[in-house]
Length: 141
Image (cartoon, rainbow, N blue to C red; front, top):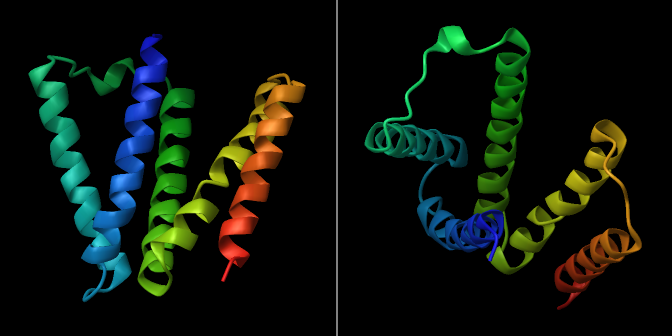
């Protein structure tokens, strides 16, 4: 099995777990503050992983373009989390999570438009199935 696939499955599992834990976690707290706490935990965990693996690098090695895109990615992540936690606070996980997974469809479209990735019939079909599945789940009673 490819290493990327193992990490992608891990990402999907932990994202699913995040939805359940987040739903319980935002029950009695402001969703924005909950996101702030989550962000601090992520900083601590990633710092520990980098330290344990001896992967610290000097910021002077970062090119300005790299730093700019990482900052924009961080902003997008933060906005995504703020929206996600508010949605979890207001709605059921069973409907919020499938809508959140429409990020796959947005990623495909953005990758084709901005990165020049090819859009095969398999990727197009899979994307359309994700949209269809999300709509079925959200509009089911």
